[in-house]
Length: 204
Image 1 (cartoon, rainbow, N blue to C red):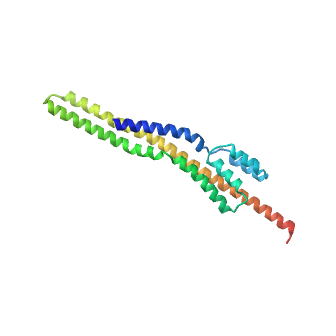
Image 2: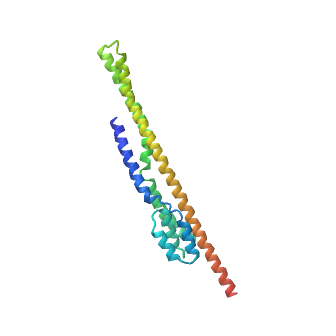
Image 3: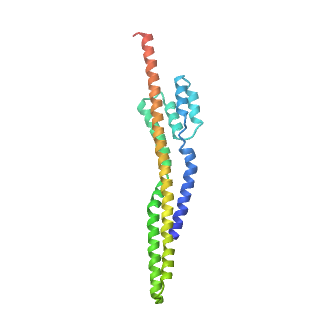
């Protein structure tokens, strides 16, 4: 039970830390992309950059990187976005392997504790030469099963928490990549429009 108690305390600490951290690093900034695109189409790049800088999370940071490096080639912009995004994605994945490991180990530790408890119970009965120890056996087995129940409870809680954080991580990652790509496409389209206009005006 002591290893299970330690695992449960670690798991609770990780869950609380992740819940607090995900409030900022998992912010997908809903509605920000539309506002930024609108500002960029109007040519108000400084206002668009200010909108991004006022929000936290990978989406806002990557959009700000696109705007800040808009004069560079697309490949360079994508590298800047990838560098910033990966920094956030590493933070999102932090400590999640602990929950995954706890989900796997805690039921096994519970079963192991139950086996040791039952072995101890039968050894005690054999040592006392108690031929009518039916109640003693049931009480010992019942007590030993607490370890299995505890291990399964910890595993269920960690499994739910891990899947929740993993789902948030995937959502934020996809949202960041899609938002950055859409903004890059808008900026490219805008540049093409300007280039075509200069061609028509210059006529050679």
